[in-house]
Amino acid sequence: MELSNKISAVVTGGASGLGEGTARLLAAKGVKVGIFDMNEERGESVAKDIGGVFARVDVSDEASVDAGFATVRAVNGQERIMVNCAGIAGGMKTASRDRKTGEIRAHDAGFFNKIINVNLIGTFMCVAKSAAGMMSLDPTEPDGERGVIVNTASVAAQDGQIGQVAYAASKGGILAMALPVARDLAREGIRCNTILPGFFETPIYEQMKPEVKETLRAYVQFPARFGTTEEYARLVATLCEQTYINAEHIRADAGARMPPR
Image (tube, rainbow, N blue to C red; front, side, top):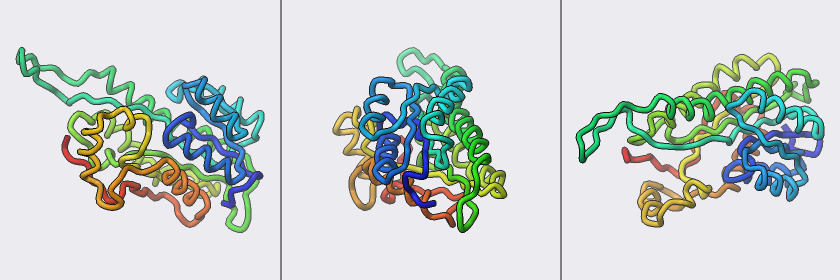
């Protein structure tokens, strides 16, 4: 797919981090960009900077997702690119023992459900509703492509750490979706790929103590640093442009493998 002002895109989590980097790069290539995010102030600011459209969307709420698509499509038209970057993190062991009291606790089901609802179900709702919209478009030449979906999982989908059972499950689900989604949509000319980012300079990692970041950096092979949001965005753009890449997952981690903790 050629990135130009004839194309529109929706980026979830587009007010910060990987989503913001993606929204900015796509806009720089001329793409009309719609941003879904919960942070209204930041989202409006980014949208203004890039000449895009912002919609306050909770991706775990179907009515909110529907309203977001309606808002963005009213200005930019039906998107041909859907990039899912919205997500939340959090840690809790499957079962744990309090070192002081000896009390044993099972993983909180509500916490698990929240992570799954935002990361996995939220991603899927945006995928399904965007794909349905893409199916209404005329195919582009020469391959008859209608659209492309890029989802964001995490290296935790394969290297989940201690306390990441909910997060790893949510990202593992996103990883597992790529092939069946691509198969479901193949006859409609819609592709689906997944990126598994490692350590990137995003708000989550920026909040870490310097010594924690240094520990994580030690697991990165080359280049020995955290990735940038622009590097992530360039990979998204490549997946949009390279029509022959479909149903694939790509680790963007500089060779890092996450340790147990």
